[in-house]
Image 1 (cartoon, rainbow, N blue to C red):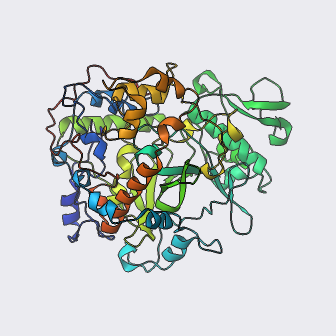
Image 2: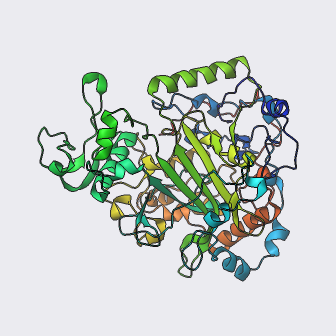
Image 3: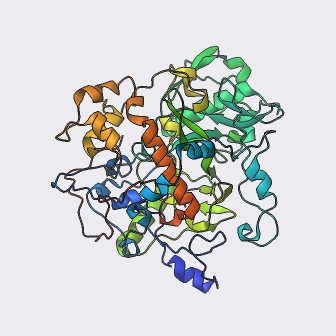
Length: 554
């Protein structure tokens, strides 16, 4: 079940030695080598897919699957065997085997609630705390030693209007827009330890009319066009006068009038093209920005915060004020289909020729890490006192496995194709903090099946490690067979699956807090309460999972 990631000829340790890098303690902020050479392979890839009774569980298919162009990874075969490089034989994620009962017991409920309800991102007057901190970086964070932080500085304020747009303290749009989405199956469900959100921002040229002035209507249409391109589907919009957009035929009806849909109709080899609007259309014609199905334009940014679970008085879990992590992605380079396919083929050959070499990760703490497919990743994480700090090189390396190394992604990303569609609350353009008390239905796969229901059936559990007893009690009978009535409820309300009880939420919060206080993220950041027996401590690359046939992830 490992990630099908392939490597360059030099190992990270050998290269760092050649560059004169020094050895420091694991997880040191300015570290230049990886103590865990395969930090990009996540803990889930060490799951024992056979249980004690010999039954097979397959959580692997949601990540490792037949991909859709321009993702050419096609790693559905990794559902069948543990294809780990030699350095990954011993499971480095030792936090999975820790008993945190004592640590959990030492934190009272009131202490935990007070901690997670304290905002560590913005102060009382709306200033962004980690941004102020980064303007005067500690020496350990200053990778190039120039006395200035040149990396990611957060600028989202999390002050959203009714359309999901973020505003700064002066009421000016920051360009960020929040959207609601179906959390990826397994670890990203709140019942398994964290809440979260996602924001997208397109470059300034997408937010301007042809005369160069900021135009929110233009920006909304360009976001709809990007959504149509990555989903490869029509996207409904508010009635829009096409004459105000330079005469762009958004609905492809052959005339310029009022459009209520962005029609997806892109087949350039057959002479069918699509274009952005406003200043972005001019930039596209000049070759400064690009458009293709399944790809975001260069300059696209994503912001994803990971948060504690706040068990509110009404019994419904919410995002905490405190942030565990700020994860940031920026598309710095446009790679067309041919280049992406060539890189995937090169990696496949290197994996075949040198199966025991680990992947070479480019980057550092200050400038982020690159995934080889045009994207750079950076982030912040809590220090031992709960303040947000830059993630170390090794902590950042954890990002590039899932983002760019599996068949399930769309242009190395997950979220926008999973956005709640038009017709749902605010057409899906809102932050979870603005969520109305409306039910969200299970996401429908391409084969017509409910995504979450199928995950429970294929995996036989609500998480990769089969450790979530609440989901087991809600959705499975005493013989571990999925209950049809519980699965059917997902057709109208996924909250019955995603939302943990107050007791479980607090225990998961406390388990994660102990990791924060230890600063042991390099040994795993998934909150677990008891040592897991469903995870291998050591994996032989010849081991098979027991899965007979790969399951399509879409």
